[in-house]
Length: 111
Length: 114
Image 1 (spheres, rainbow over the protein chains, first blue to last red):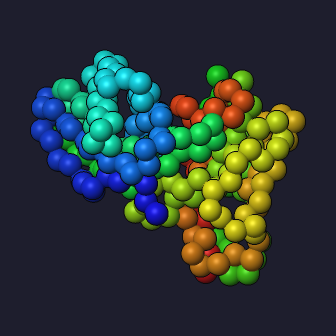
Image 2 (cartoon, each protein chain N blue to C red):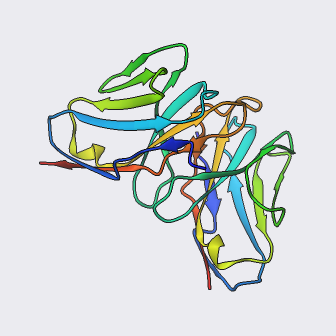
């Protein structure tokens, strides 16, 4: 049962514009959410996270928004750069030991 | 600071065989988690080790087993390999006892079962 869903397999955006990645979850017990970025032949790299007690967290060009009532979170990248082209995974945790991942969204930043 | 390393990079095995994958955690990290990533899917949690004990397990059969050593490195063993075991196996380490937040991943081992 997929508890974390990323319904957009791919996203293409022009350099300098905003990239918005979406993620939905079904488990109301999730209390911590993370975004990971993955380049080919590398493991996922932690990008940004948010606790369920917050609705926004910002780190440089990356901002994550959490809407608990809608069980939805999003990642905004502003401005998008060519190096942002990668697969982005949304992940969530309800306990102390495991992460549940979405299937990923492939972002392509066009010059 | 040394990151998470995994060996081997690639592996080809025959159905029914056994395989051992290895992981060295990031310096200062005492917790290791293993994930399986099938093609086109996100990583799926297999299990986590903390202080050489299994600290939690996902929905994987007992033929998936692991070890953690005193230096916090870890092994993933898979017995009686099946074709569906073909995947990228990722190891992740984290710094605090049992807390998953901000796990740091290795590059993975690509396992192909024929």
